Every structure is written in C-alpha cells, then in structure tokens.
Image (tube, rainbow over all chains, first blue to last red; front, side):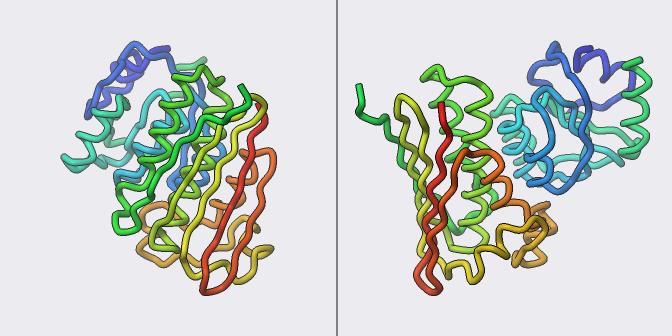
Length: 109
Length: 140
C-alpha cells in the first residue's frame, strides 16, 4: 500500500510529500528516538508525537516510508523545510497514535 | 587496493539540532560507493548515536570513517568529561542526559547499546576529564 493511499484512507493532512507513491510495510509507534532507531524497520510507517528536527534525521537514517504525526502535532517551518530537503514524507492527523495504528491495521487486512 | 577510503567530519557541539549531519552525509557517501543498504543502515545509525552522544555530553568532537575492502571502521573522538563507568553506560536504560535532552526524545539510555547492536565490534577508551575514543567496526 502506498503513502498516498493511506493518506487518503485515513484523511491525513500532508506536511511534506516527497514520494507519495512509496510503499510502506509495517508500522512502528514510538517517541524515544534511540529506541526507534534500534527497533523500527526500513519502509515502516512511523507514528510519533515528536516534532523536533531530529525526527527527520532518524527517519532518514532508518529509511522509514512516512512519518505520521499523531494528535494534531505539526512541524515548525524550519523542520518542515528540513523534511522537504531530505525527501521525508510527513503527514499529520488529529487521531491518537493508537487510533492511527488501529486504522492502519484495519487497512492491511 | 588496500588503501582505505577515508571521510572526516567535525561534529559541532553547540548546535544540537544539527547533530546527524555527518551520519546523513556518510549514508550518501556509502551509497555512492555501492555499499549494501543493510550495512549503510548499521553504519549511519551507529554513527548518529555517536554524534548525539558527543553533542549531549562532550561539546562535540570528530568522526572518522575508514572503508576497507573487508570492513568499515568508525572512529569517534572527543575531549569531553569521559565516561565514569563504561559497564554501567553500556546498560540499556542508563543515562546521564539532562531533562532538556530527554524532552527531545533522546536520553533513553539506548545510545551506546545501539552502537554495539549495529556494529560487529566496539571498543571504548575513556578517561575522566580527558575524553572518549570509540572505535566501531562493521564487517563487509
């Protein structure tokens, strides 16, 4: 399933759209960045409430398919620009991390 | 052919938000050299954790990456306060990072364990008041 398809299905609000056709595989939920780096997998959709610039570096290094910001979290303009420069897909949603994960699980079946 | 390809980076200790520049750059460099994605992931994550540590604890430092035919070596050096108890620092969950760092999502006590997890060998030399030198090797 592509990033564009989950964005549409979950009514996500785009913040940066670098590659909407990228396919995601699996979901990781977490806010501790070292934990995410240790456990998340390449091509995961990563759900977090963190919004500082370090999430862009983590997303780049782990090579997640998309960052999904939960609970209406958004990015400062400088962070948004960094995400754009690094080619990281970022969307936001009013849903909680649990609701996003549950919705993604529902789509996957 | 036995000559290593070398990259050198200075890690700025003043700007926490720019930490990661060296590891993102090395990721690009390794990709250009045709290194496998899994190895690139290991090297760049281990290096990022090292960079973050140097910024949080040591006021910055230097990172050298040497690429040989059979391995990649990552050497991190800083002139920070040193690590008082390396065994303790290697335990998952142990951290001396301040609260402002924790609020950014770091300081979970996973940095050094992640560096060990993602490399094939890791050697730490640290002296209180003098600094820390970490050599990590990823086999190719």
